[in-house]
Image 1: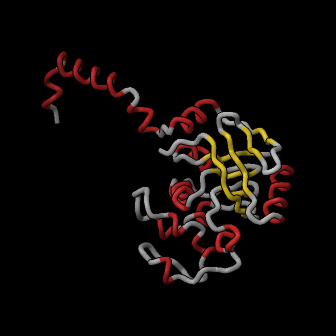
Image 2: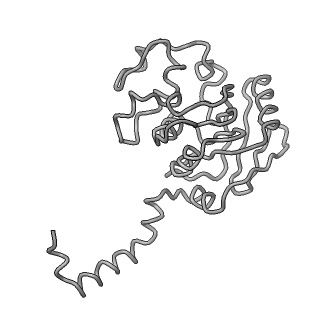
Image 3: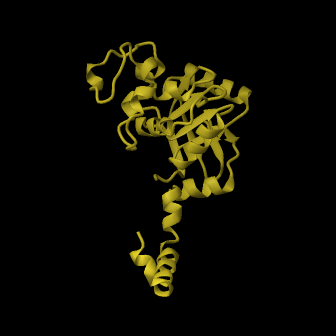
Length: 214
């Protein structure tokens, strides 16, 4: 998993409440459990005017010119600004996969659905909860100033605005540790590889018949 320490990026404002995971990555793209290739279909039903199917070449699609991510001023955005209850609906882990593979590193919103919130941390995305009034002001700034960027400093737990003002945010200590070090669940387990190998060796030495048990 990619480490998250300090990230500076262009902000894209997603001005919708209750964005569910089926909107983030529609159901027809869930056939694959490979954690690759979902970025082109992020927000597929809003992003394109035609219905997309797995394996379809994005170059053959009809983009929706009114959708925020298709507007030239937000090309290359890596920080998503959202409204309350972002990521509601089903628990599909494909949603954070798609956001990550599109290029987003952080999502700022007044609230998130619980399962989506947890899945973000497990996949290298940083979901940040700020007061609704603060998020509304960020929306105003992102819409008013083309090229609006924010700097997210996870170690210090602050968002730095272009003029230097800082917005503090909370993050649970264990989740912060994992993001700073790039540890997903597998990475955390592999930190104990020597202990696991020692346990297996001792188990086979004391109970050798287990090596031949089906």
